[in-house]
Every structure is written in structure tokens, then in C-alpha cells.
Image 1 (cartoon, rainbow, N blue to C red):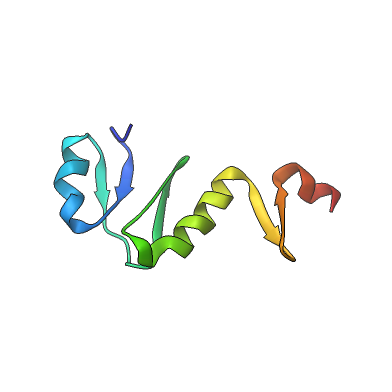
Image 2: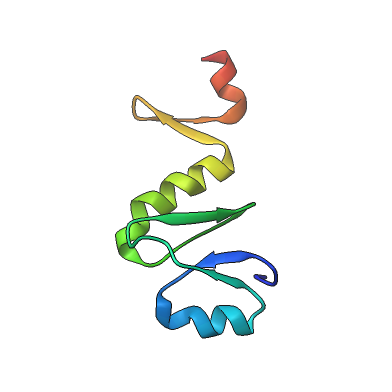
Length: 76
């Protein structure tokens, strides 16, 4: 899953990420990292950034409390 991919995680997980073939990325506690369609973060303090990046990867935008998919934005 993570072989050759950049993965953010708690520093204690760096050995596991490396052993799985991933590239450990150190992000701010409230940050998130995107590598293609893989979104990762350090932990719960980064949940807002993680969710924001997940929505971008999925092509979703939240506007006025409504979720819009990428194709719906053109019509709105």
C-alpha cells in the first residue's frame, strides 16, 4: 500500500512506515500530507487538515453547508 509513497505519521511509526517501503514525512501536528490519492496526518490534531485534503482528493467542495462534487461546481 505505501511502498514508494510519502506517508505522514507519528514519529513513533517511522520504523513501520519505512519497513513497509514508505517514505516517512514529518508534518506539523496540525498538518496533513498528500501523495497522489493518499492522504495522511500525524494524529487527531491534524484531523481538520486531513479531512480538508481528503475532500480535495475526492473532488468535493463544501459551500454554504452543502457538499458539491467536482462536476456540480460548474453548474452552481
